[in-house]
Amino acid sequence: MNMKNKSLILIILSLIASIIWQLVTRQSLSLLETSNSLFFIAGILLIFALLWLTLSSGVFDFFNYSMKKSLHIVKRKEEKLEVTPLSKSVGTGFKTFLISGAALLVISLFALLGYYL
Image (cartoon, rainbow, N blue to C red; front, side, top):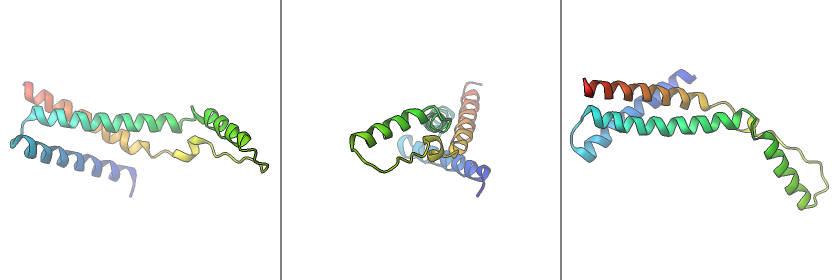
């Protein structure tokens, strides 16, 4: 499954979850509540994606290496230390969450615009 399909599935599931949440808690649908709930979901997805992006960019690779090396020295192990960079460990799967979060944010803004017009 490619990134486009994963993003689309995540967007559709978020929309369905938002509508079900509204029906369960408010017993009605409104554009304002839809906008609010989609905004929260988009915010969570975007924060998660940006954290993942930061880790995969290599910013914390040296810190990760230093911590593993110090722990290796403290444990007094004799074998050679092989450390995989943190950016290689986390990968680049953040794009799905970034695209889904941005799309849900746009949908949320359109719902808010529809409510006030």
